[in-house]
Image (cartoon, rainbow, N blue to C red; front, top):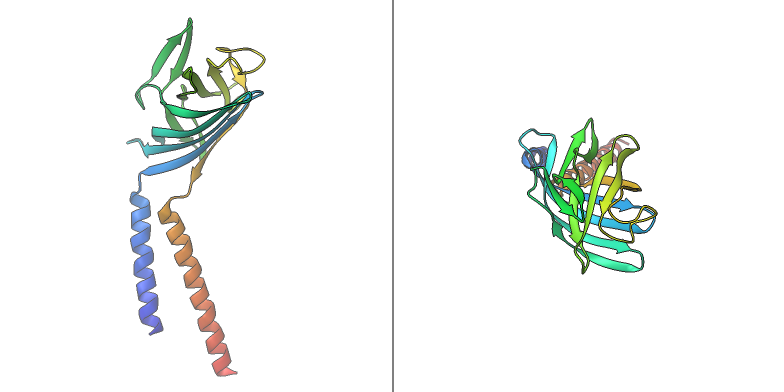
Length: 193
């Protein structure tokens, strides 16, 4: 009976592992905080053909701007294609792509652009290599900070991957296997005592 159970567990682990390796869609938790603006976002993305970049397909979340909370309206532009929007003589540059560089998630050269609020404020998050990763924002929001709207605002930004269902399944299966092995060892020890 134990050999049969072990065989089934191995087969299940292999099939879940195969599904996990074929998964190309990912979910990312994105946060950004500057002096007066905080973004809390969840982005769905698809792994690009190059195996390094994730093309963001949609974004949801909230923007806390001063005392106001706005719901994110959506992405600007076409994902994976560099684009820009001219607003009051200022340019927002974006491609809505997350890149995995040596295991570190960061924006590509242009970053992410979303709109939120009743005035469709633009929030353009990007990496400023001079100051560090994922810590800069351009926005049309007048509450942006000491530089005012349209100026680069520095803050703290993070991009983290959310574990997929297949990852959770593999972890649970592993814990079940360890529990079963511990149970079997305990039973065998009691039998020989």
